[in-house]
Amino acid sequence: MIALSDFEILLIALGILYVASCVHMARYARRTGRNAWLWFFLTLLLTAVPVTLYFYVVYFLQRRRELSGPTGRLRRCPHCRRLISPGTPLGACPHCRMPLGDEVQDA
Ligand SMILES: [Zn+2]
Image 1 (tube, rainbow, N blue to C red):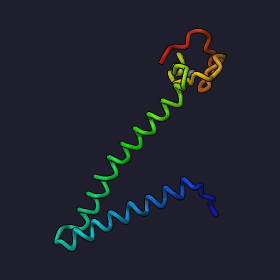
Image 2 (image 1 turned 120 degrees about the horizontal axis):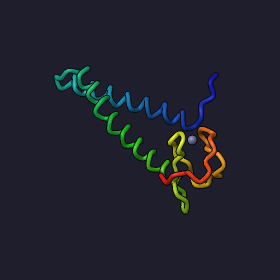
Image 3 (image 1 turned 180 degrees about the horizontal axis):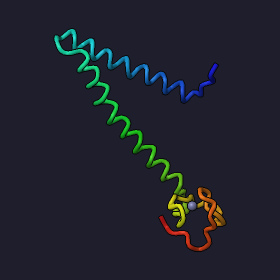
Image 4 (image 1 turned 90 degrees about the horizontal axis):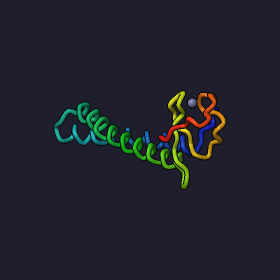
């Protein structure tokens, strides 16, 4: 048996709810004389894309805020170009393990 976290259960429940709402839309379309499959996929696509974009932007902004921290500045490794959070000791890059020295650039 696979153990699921609360977040995964929430995601599965939202997924089921989402598909159920698309099925509901398709049944409504068929009842009103329209193509049920067309409206099912239209609902699926036209609601999934903006919702996905919205959550991606929210996640990206939150991650950037976490990395920049309340006082420090976000920095970039000169070797792998990935972002380094301000709390990280400046001995070596946490991503590529290359020595950083004084050449760390502001992001
Ligand atoms: Zn690096």
